[in-house]
Figure 1: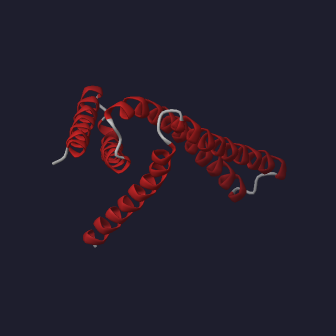
Figure 2: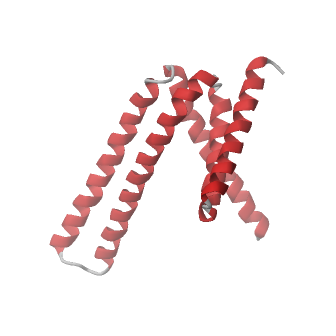
Figure 3: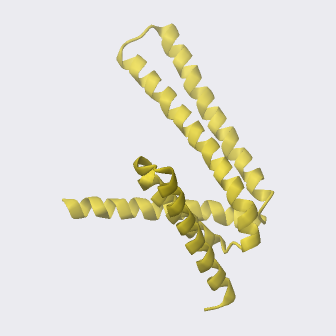
Length: 157
């Protein structure tokens, strides 16, 4: 095992252990599935990006901050979507639907702004090639996880 793979393995184990200890210490049993996925994602991204320990120290706080902001933006989009959908189904007045439509569009615009700002935040702590690899690796992880969930669902049938 070369030194780079060894360091990646150490980082992977450290992140996984820290996540497990943090989840238990905070008693967030209802978020176990989210913590588990995030631990797997962090390990996957660390290896895919071939991130150094120095890069990891600068990158993960930025990634976590951006992730929280994007999670909130996605929540706002889905919440405004639900309100709009319910108003349409309830045949609310046009004025109310118009206001809810504006709210939904503004939430989408805010999410897009945060997505664009994320790239600059990542470029501030990682080389451009690794930032590009990050986006490719996130999509790869998402697809692999969907595939994994799909197969679990098929096994239960």
